[in-house]
Image 1 (cartoon, rainbow, N blue to C red):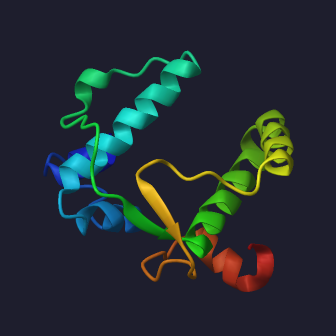
Image 2 (spheres, rainbow, N blue to C red):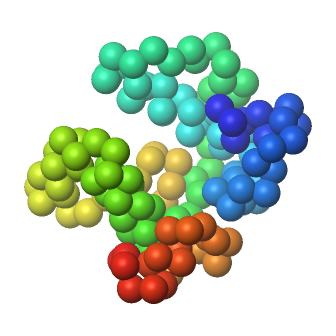
Amino acid sequence: MLAQAVLLGRTKGWQRHSQLHRFQVHEEPLAAIGFYLRHIHDEARTREYRYDQRKIVAPVEHVDAIAVTTGQLHYEFWILKERLKRRAPYKFQDLLRRERREAGPTPHPLFTVVEGPVAPWEKSYWRRQSLAGAGP
């Protein structure tokens, strides 16, 4: 929702967050974030979370996909595992079991996976950890 607010110009914070780049360069940024959030809403409902879909400005059913590299996908999956290991060890164990059953992380339907490294716009603490040899 914060990414949507940034794209709409409704907040001054987070305007340069690296993850926004993938939406900002899309031909239809609001439609892309709307599609993304619509699927997040659907997943939230299956988990019985409360998620007010009325806040999604453009909950479209189709939008052109965004390419995500294998390196970026695995990098973001590594970050998720690191955070879960610290914050929710039981969910971390569930994720490890799921990872063993499946052939790697499953991307959001907005993304099409292509071969490649971590995205050059990725500048987070986690990337520095990864480059230091602590990650993927």
